[in-house]
Structure formats: structure tokens, C-alpha cells
Amino acid sequence: MTPEDLLLTPTGLLAFGRRLPCTIGRSGVTRAKREGDGATPAGVHRIIGLMYRPDRIAASALPDWAVPIDPGDLWCDDPASPDYNHLVRAPFTPSHERLRRADPLYDVILTTDWNWPHAVPGKGSAIFLHRWRRPGAPTAGCVALDPRDLLWLVHRITHRTRLIVR
Image (cartoon, rainbow, N blue to C red; front, top):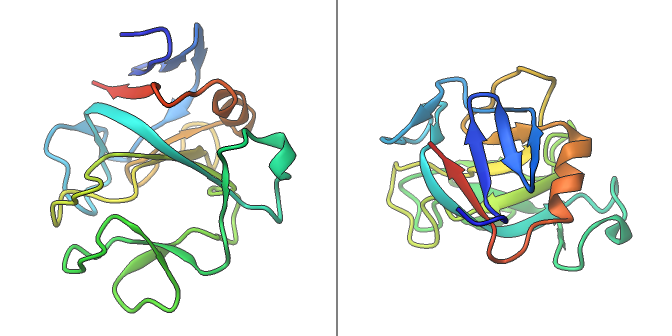
């Protein structure tokens, strides 16, 4: 581990010398991730992107590498699609997740390299770090944090930061 690593532990996310409470997938952690299983994939994942809702968060409140989420931004979760586990734009027919949600969960998203860029169909998609619904509420496989902790975290991450899930 390096000082920049984010370590997911049973008591939260250990990040830059702080323990941040977090939630994970409703099915816990798995080494055999499958699309729709509700589990957070074990392993070492790079942080590959930072996206945000420009209508809810000012660009000046985020690092300069943050990319705005446009109204047509989607994430393909259809294992039969050649765009599986990639950012796509509407209109898009295969199954997908809308990144510009009505709720605030995806106001800030850290994307990971789980099953990316060369996605294996069915191995899982859209594994992000994002804000939680509430403390203790599980995700569909992502890692979720208090919104204040998420913003604290995005200001410390670099291109060398890794998410370690055991």
C-alpha cells in the first residue's frame, strides 16, 4: 500500500490517514462479481475519472480534472452491448444507467477501472464511488460515502490513487 491508497475495511474506508464511514453493495464483497449481483468487487481498482452535476455543484468546488455530467450521459450496463461498462450518450437503446439522476447520489462520481476498458460481458459495470442515500444504506455494488467525505476525498486523489477492496 502507498499513502495514496484507499483501503476498504469492515469499519469504513481508510483514506489519507482518516477513516471515512461508507457503505458497499447489498451482497457484500465478492471475488466473483457478476452483473446485477449487488456485490462490491474485491481487488485493486484505479480511479479513472471524476464526474459531477454542474447544475448542482460548481466546477470551482472540484479539482480541475472533473468532467461535467451532461443530460444525455448514460452508462451502459447491457452485457450484450459492445458499449458494456462504458459511458454512452442518449439516445441509446441497450440497457443503461442514467448518470444525471433525479436524486443526488451521482452529483459527484469517482469512476473506477473495474472491468474497464475491455469489459468482459456480465462481469459487472458502473462500479463507482459516490454519495450515500443515508448511513448504512447499501448500494448496488458501488462504494458510497457521506457527501462531505466524498468531496474531501476528491481533493486528495491523484492519478496514482487506488481503491483496495478485500
